Image 1 (spheres, rainbow, N blue to C red):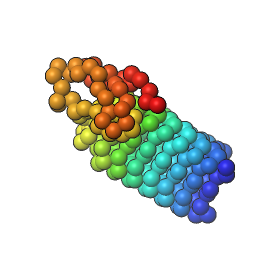
Image 2 (cartoon, rainbow, N blue to C red):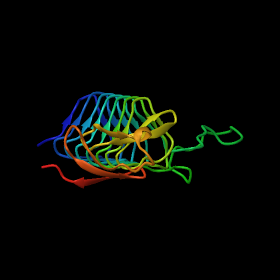
Image 3 (cartoon, helix red, strand yellow):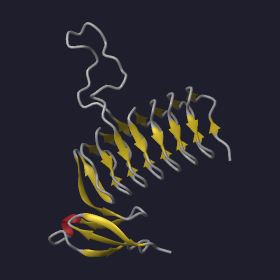
Image 4 (tube, rainbow, N blue to C red):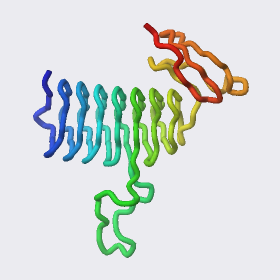
Length: 208
């Protein structure tokens, strides 16, 4: 396998890109970033320095990924998604006499996107939080808090409305549960079985 890089892409020094990955037109990847194998970075996306991206990650067009973001393997990031890393951003010092530096400082907070998660189009992702394994975030959502594994989050601010399977299909809506204790739930699409107890979602058996 080889790496495909569009001639209009800007790849800075000390960027590592794994075999089989494709970097499309007008992408800008800053220095000291690592991108795994078989990844796709869509056109006009920006990836800041010291970002770590695992294998088989799909990043669609016009995505902004800032410093202090880590993305594990198998994550889907849809078009127009924006990550943030500062809860109290200011352009200048308190007296407005000079610009504040852009380097990370004590206010720079990391974000971790766990394996298999999906982030819908035009989402905004807050900082200092974790998006759980195989979680799904609906399009246009504003994420202000961490998301548990397999949860479906929607809205502004985004909130948990149900659970999703590894295949991405809806398992159950939490509003339909009595006392949030349904026990075993089977995915109607792929047959994966989960235990759902007090909104904690855990896979029970692998599907052949």
